[in-house]
Length: 169
Image (tube, rainbow, N blue to C red; front, side, top):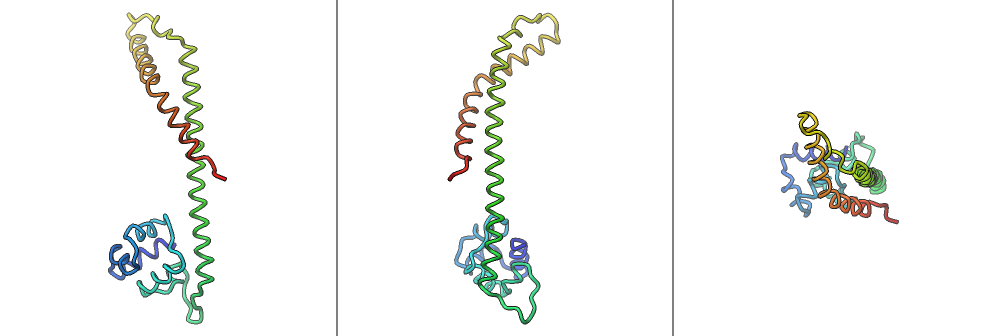
């Protein structure tokens, strides 16, 4: 909600990301990250953003404003905490996905190596006078040739990926 509101109100005011960034004394990428939902402004910047866009903070956060209701830093801070928790959860889900991906990739590589080792190059003894077997044999041989050269690199990369995406305590 916050990301859409920042972008919509900025455009309504006819400001570019660069112009808004200058008003807030931040870099343009910060505005871009807010509008993409990759980060959120802290409470001080949210108040400054509200002033720069001439819009109440509660409107930026997606609430309808009544005349009696005023923006309090405590309310803003609670809402930002919720948004930060959501971003942290999204980041944790991505970390878990990549961690599982690297583990599965290692398992697939190991199983493929076992499969190739048990095949023991039997495809080399096939009757290559049969065109269908010849095509299949060349395909298997090509796969094995490429796999043997790339598998160690991919396996090491996967191990590094597992280490980098493990949960830090």
